[in-house]
Length: 237
Image (cartoon, helix red, strand yellow):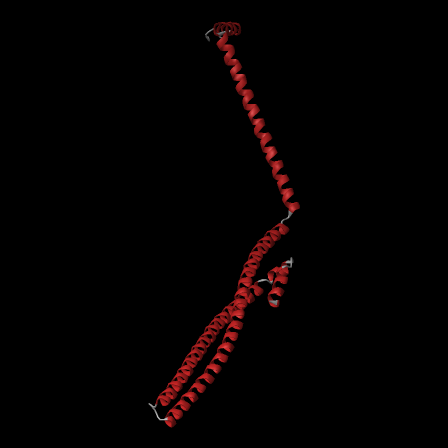
């Protein structure tokens, strides 16, 4: 956990150089997670094996206790048969002694198996705690790795944008915009000037047309009188 804490101390740095170096810690953390998952698989396998040994020891203890009780019952039966006269006393005593010896052997085996069972169960309990710790650690590291990757993505994007902004020539751009504004203003004024000239010409023509339409006869008479005055109506000699 100390290693991962150090990795996140690097991630908390705000300098661009530290952000550039985050790629390696991410790879290191991903490799550490793969190693932890392998350890978890091995721990689960070991836990299953130890639990199986504990179950086997428990079954052996139960079986040995059952056999010890069986031999004890047989010894009792042998003595009872001798007491009834169905079996010679010496033979009954010999066989009963052998039965009691077997009983003692199975009781001793049951005791050893019970001790093994307790030892295996303690080991299984410890392994189970280790498995739970590994699972919690893996889950925590996975969540922190997701957060770290997200932070790297945001930091990289922010760095790129800031770098682009830092490279902008603000003074040159403003000057260029001002020149463009001046050129546009000149073009707009020129267009407006041509529009006014066209409008004036159009207005003059409309005024002449309106004058002719308002007094067409008088205009013709005036024109004829002007021609006569100038002698334009006289045919050439």
